[in-house]
Amino acid sequence: MTSDNSSILFYRVSEAYGFMSNFARYPIALDGQVWPTSEHYFQAQKFAVEPTKEQVRAAPSPGEAARLGRTLPGIRSDWETIRDDVMLKALRAKFAQHADLGRLLVGTGGQRLIEHTPNDNYWADGGDGSGRNRLGELLMQVRDELREG
Image 1: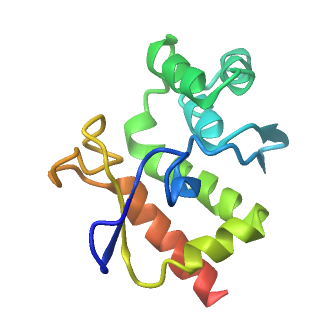
Image 2 (image 1 turned 180 degrees about the vertical axis):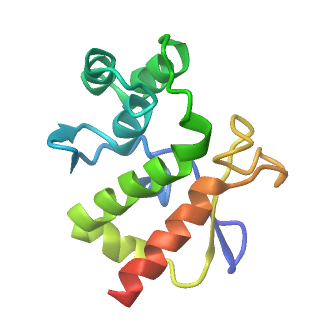
């Protein structure tokens, strides 16, 4: 969904610009493993112990990986300080390893990218613009990096 000529709103994988969602099914190779989606990678990094990371990596869907990331015990004590860096690493991998997606991202030009949902006030806009939209901001950073080449 597009709100105006200067912003692109995205959220659902099935909608326009859904490729930007972490739930979009584009595997990434990071840290010596293949992750089914960037969401799987991101959620697994909340944990320091390999069996828990593997449980999240093996989740049958990105939604299940997200649920596990919210409910499994043992989240790293430094998670709040490293989560943006982890997300950026996952996004860089996704858009570098899938050149077609990288071209689509660059093709958004200078438009502001906004994850639009009331379900998240940190990664998204909170549905009303009050959220931080960190996912959109990091996607714009990756877009700039790809443009610079």
